Structures are given as C-alpha cells and as structure tokens.
Length: 153
Image 1 (cartoon, one colour):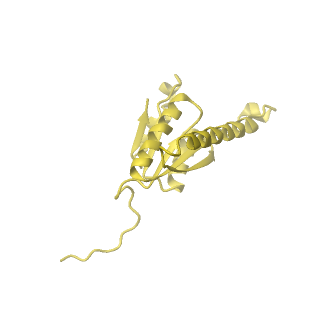
Image 2: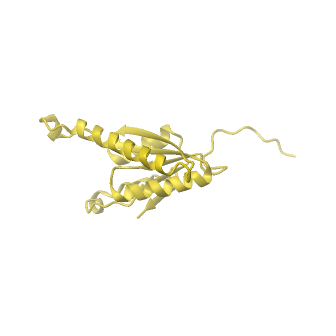
C-alpha cells in the first residue's frame, strides 16, 4: 500500500470551484456571463465576474476623462448584474462576486484568474476586427495554457 502525501493546491480536481468571466459591456461578454453563470450554478462554483478597466491613455493624460468613464462602466455593469440576479433569484442560485482590475484585458484577466485561484475562465468572442493583427484576448488566454478557457460566440 502506497502512502498518500498531502499535495499542494490542484485546480479542477473536483470540478471548478471558481469560474472567472470577463465582462466589458459587449453582447458577447454578456453571453459569456450567462454561460458562466449556468456553469457556476450547475457546479456550485463561485462566479467571479471581472471587468478590466483600461489603463489611462495618452488622450486621458491630455484631459479626456477616461478614468471616470471606465468607473461609470464598472458601476453600470454591477447595477445590471444585480438587477439580473434579483430578477432570476428564484430560478438561479448562483454565488457571485464582481471584481475590477486595471490594465489591458488580457493582463487583467490573467491577474484576476491568478489572484482568485480560478479553475476556469470564460470570455466572449472578440467583436473587434483588430484582433486579427494583435490576437484576441481569448486566443491569448488559450495559448497561456494555465486554465481551461471557454470562448462563447
């Protein structure tokens, strides 16, 4: 009989305990959030809803109020999530938290997934034509290979 030794934290051994979903106000991010909420409900996992506030741009440094705008977006997202949660509370029993990180979307989601010890990451498919040049956030997360990543169209 071999002796079992205690091991360090291992992701996803008994199903996901923390599912991170990135939201930015786009329709694909809302679909990703709905998908992740269903997954979290079925798995009895915590749904960590993450909004990544963009870093201050050069335009903001010249007087454009970018920080206030992104803060307002975060507040609007929280209000929408709370409203949806209240509307479906008898149908959906989902534990959720809202987190705001700063930076570019990829780095922000990586930081969020690391800090929250995510077992899975869910994102919406990119709606931008620019991702063909730089690479979409979803593709970059998949290539990182650190968590299972689900991309919702």
